Length: 311
Ligand SMILES: C[S@@+](CC[C@H](N)C(=O)[O-])C[C@H]1O[C@@H](n2cnc3c(N)ncnc32)[C@H](O)[C@@H]1O
Image (tube, rainbow, N blue to C red):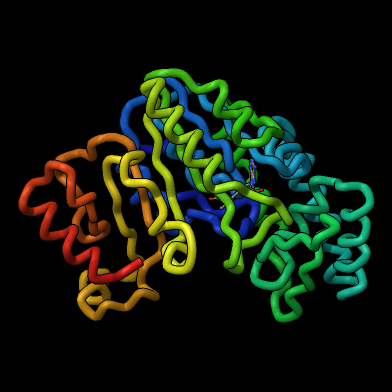
């Protein structure tokens, strides 16, 4: 397990909505826990930072979970599978990509999915209404070289050894959570470029699940896309459900960006149902709290700055 503040591993599966760039900052908020849960695992950027040995990671996409299990138990097989497809692409050109894409849409081979995630336009995982992968080849990029990806696959295989991967709706994964556990929630967004499946994701049901976790004494951290939040969900997160609210910024000088009120600088909105550590890495995180909560004056000031960004 990586220590908080360590750098994230290079991605093994490229995934829309990946938290890779902000994973170390989010990991600073991880408290000690008995078990760690990720019910929306996707590309698994937070997995190397899990705060305890026992962890369960779920996703609704079966071939993604199969891929994780193969990386975990048969990394060599995954490395070889990528290499053979990558060589086809170099030798045959774009027809190889579209052959593999159509093969994936018929057989749902997890290694086809890995190859597609590595060679499609901007690494954007996109399915159509019928559930078929429909992104095109990224013509100007050859895809990561197999020797490089092999090393990354081996690193990940070691990092995820103790994790149980499950194909499951998040509500089923959350049934396994008990008091003292930590849940990291990174749900899918609608209305943004990060679309995964044509799902009807009920935000109300999702909030009910958060309330249930509160009632059993589990801790959770929720991330919402800042941009999506501006348009959709974030204003609606019911204030009674969470304790803390952060905005995460990218770039070398997030403070300058904040003062310039550049909403584009906002990467993610983060909610927690527990008290944060008193010493925050303020260069990396700016915080907002519910006005009704007890806050220190420093926190209140940060909260005002945060509010100016207007999610
Ligand atoms: C924002 S992505 C997670 C990204 C991940 N944190 C990362 O760093 O790569 C959301 C994930 O939720 C999954 N998902 C969507 N609906 C789901 C559901 N009802 N239950 C479980 N997983 C779901 C999607 O397949 C997608 O992989």
